[in-house]
Length: 431
Image 1 (tube, rainbow, N blue to C red):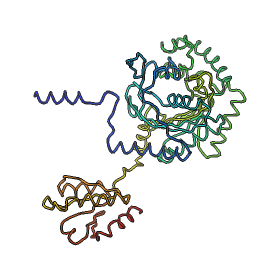
Image 2 (cartoon, rainbow, N blue to C red; image 1 turned 90 degrees about the vertical axis):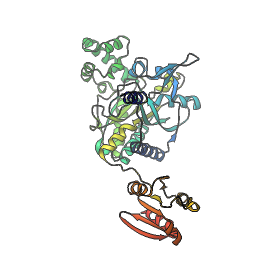
Image 3 (cartoon, rainbow, N blue to C red; image 1 turned 45 degrees about the horizontal axis):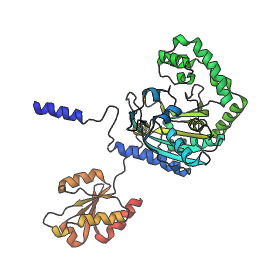
Image 4 (cartoon, one colour; image 1 turned 90 degrees about the horizontal axis):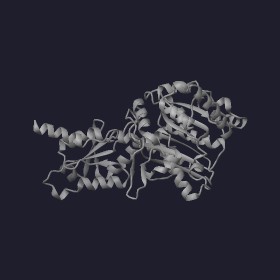
């Protein structure tokens, strides 16, 4: 009993922290496939990689996301460093990328960037949402025209198409308008929320008092969502400039044959967003329907540096959620090595101890994937080879003496001259 209790305590001691997860094969292969697919499409559009620190000063997110936001007020992982500065694990990628661009170019350069990496939010863990999660995102700095919005939307559409997810998602799109339109809507919205103040949650009432009106739109509280759904739509406050710009975005999407649905309730609770916002949503992952979201955020650079104006638009997607959707649709099969080298030489053949390694090296040099199971018995190797590779290549003493190898594939076997093996495998790889 003592050993049992000790083992239980040891297992608990070394479990991953709440909301964190270990990602092992085959899930790690699936998530790598998602990230590699997104990377390939981003590079197709001429976007270049950027890597920013996982740790940032808390001030960056207080300025960009706002002190009143749920992310900053409730979901940040923070600590005080030895120099008394407060540091934060990044909860999202856009603020750090924008800071990096401002620091290096001063906001004057045309930049096309993509990133991938871990983000951290102290949320309640649920399916597809963890406290550490992987995110892929793109940011386009420089152009303010509607075509810039459409290019990054088209890129997202192509990523989802490459993952065979288009039948499972829907593009929802809206416009937040320009500054004048948002200001007019803010006035109408404030009056509406004040009139329905008693129906709001206590937290939203406090935000209303502090003037953080847009934060109420982001509230997840059921009572707040009921009030927000009946709020005056921003569309009623759009001026002609904003309406014409949004019409141009929609026309471009139609020209590209990208299906969409306008959603007047799609908003952002951050002041720096303007004009186009969108989400690709699904009904296959429960209540949290968005799998990829983006928008234009021309005001973020000015928040971080009041002397600079830098148009920007981008999107981000959770790799875990995309992987879940791919897994549900069963459109991904983990890749297998082409060859499993079965080492049938006994310990008595010390002069041939490197034969399997030499064959593996030859195959690797030719770009053929090949694996070994060092130390395994012959029967264990044969069993593993049947599931872990496309074919098996056997090395045995009698085969070596005759200068041949035995190749097994899909229940059939054949002997090949050692010099013919590589050409045979390359042809197999090509097909």
